[in-house]
Length: 295
Image 1 (cartoon, rainbow, N blue to C red):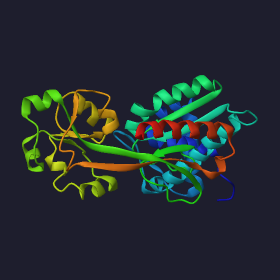
Image 2 (image 1 turned 90 degrees about the horizontal axis):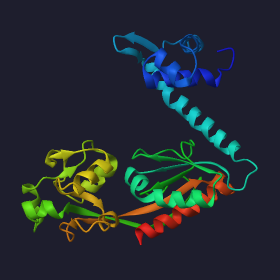
Image 3 (image 1 turned 180 degrees about the horizontal axis):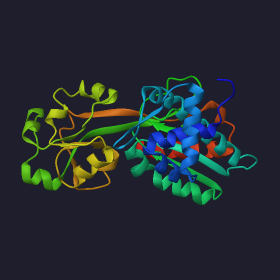
Image 4 (image 1 turned 90 degrees about the vertical axis):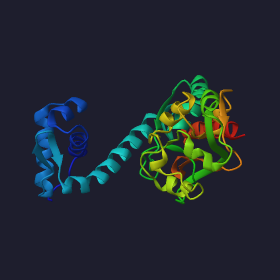
């Protein structure tokens, strides 16, 4: 390569990866299809690699494209972080802060705190990413994260905010119809709600619950919110946070002496943001919110 490659080429590359065609990528970016095509052609010429091949369903990424993807995504995250930093430059708490949390925490726990935060700081813009995928704070995919495991990177500031208790729960209507398990073996006679795809966290948790495997679940979902909705609907027995179950008198904990465990909760952010007024005020608000949730 004899010259540097502009960010706009990688931006078009990621759009084609995401949307599967030049036309769809152009619509998403608000530019013309020929421009997207030219960007892809320039990238391929620079790398001397074919990045996409045509198929009946659209453009398929080559192995070279898949190798490039993580680096382009890191560039996008850093570009977004730069925009967030400059948007709040020179203001006290104005600007954008991007928060990542699990689905359940993001949907069930944080909204009230974020509403209060916005009332107190009207110039603040919040981006809430509710996902069970761990966002990389070092790559600036987010500014602040709520996590159930302590951070390992030294560049992160972390505050422990208590323990989230998790247990088996079912709706009272379900237990009235099918009975309440008295011992763990009774669960084999019940409709169980659980995961579809195994993750490192699930593998670790399963060691504490022999037999809690995918094959044993009549209702499967990798969405924590979907599992919680199924429990609330009386569909069966599944795991949920005890603090959330206490909000409804209809949810009953099952076999608490056998299936109760705690997850450490943390609020974390990159150390470079410690002097950012907007990040500091959001960090402190999340700490208070999670302390109340885990109390």
